[in-house]
Image (cartoon, rainbow, N blue to C red; front, side, top):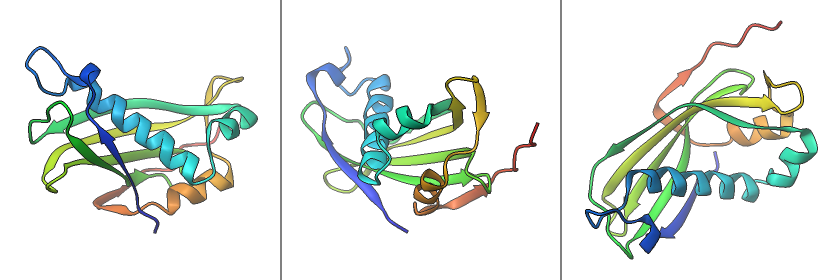
Length: 150
């Protein structure tokens, strides 16, 4: 399984009135990391356009562990916490670690793939399913039920 992580720096625009990283910046940085992971794995924005589909999120949550301040460097990984057998439904977890290795936050998303023409949920192409299958699994990986076919 291929691990992926990205180092990011907390910018001025990521900071809130309490002088620490604002809640929505965690989601923004994790989304950016997921897009970078897909691009690095060979399934970037052009592939999504070519196939006419994209990700849709059903749920997202953040468990905050340590305060993060301006200028800090964070390491954000991408692991899979759950998936249906065909990877049409998935749960991705991202751990956000400070430079000293301490866990700053855990970010979880649950989603699926949306056909942009038909506006219905679909299974991903085999190439994308293989990329998802190659991700390291979380210790509590959950096999999701296979969606019923219409």
